[in-house]
Image (cartoon, rainbow, N blue to C red):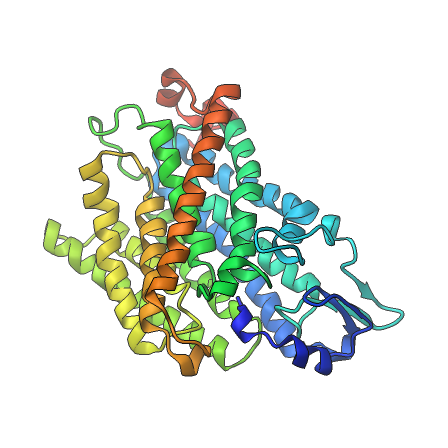
Length: 435
């Protein structure tokens, strides 16, 4: 995501022949001013990020649950994709990315009002964060981020939450947590952006948000029936590895696409994403090999995802050396977060949403402040500034998530019954089963 440090509204206004514009709002321009190359890359990136959720994340999570819950797990990702598409269209995009104040955006794009492509006059709207592509493409690219973030949370409470309660929670959470934090970090005038918090593609907005929400949900819902006493092995690691591979490939759209242009910065973001991911996969594998005597398929897949998570906030700011360091730290620390920390504290983060995304997001966001290279990103990193961004996201997301879950539990309940949980969510919630 291009941040305010890389925007040049004055230059943009000279380069694009605007006929109507606010000071930091979307602008109506001649279609000839839009870059075909940038637009093609962003259309591709949008498809890649959507591919990360369906089918990537759905398969990654679906393979890790027990067979009786695989359809319910896939259903969560698919249904969230549909739900967030509608909510982002109705109000999410407007509240996140149109001019408002330091805390929330405005209402200019409710129901995408004013987002235009006028064929007769060859004019269309662009956004100041992405002035070389149509606003429709920018809106869609941002929508895919709003889709995957709540879908990531489901890994923490897998196999025990009511589908109806999950849908209500995700709808409220998207407006009360995701949208405000996205505005703080990425929108012109957002308070974190103005403070200089660096988040190229979603370390705070996506991964810390999802990880902390997942941890809170795991604590509020409690452990799965039989957790710690009964074996709960993944039912199909082939699905998990395929899903992890799809996430790895799709992540190039996530990170390199966040340059919002087909340029050298996108190329650097793609390069460091691959480097950090490879290093993190090897680091997790080595840590597990030393600790348990054997490297596992689940371990190397989880390590790769940890590397993808950690490099996300740094992708547009660091060089290859920084990527290697971030990948190494993320692989080792996330292995500890997904195994040692979880077991030491005794919470049931079913599919390690917090251990990988929460811990990895925090590691990546902080290390962005250490390894940012000014010649690449245009700004110096600051560990203190990054820590402020991390702390604010953790506290805000944690508190609001806790309140939402408690209110939903009071009104309609969060968990299926013990009997239903033992039978399996596929049959209980959806009337289907995998034979």
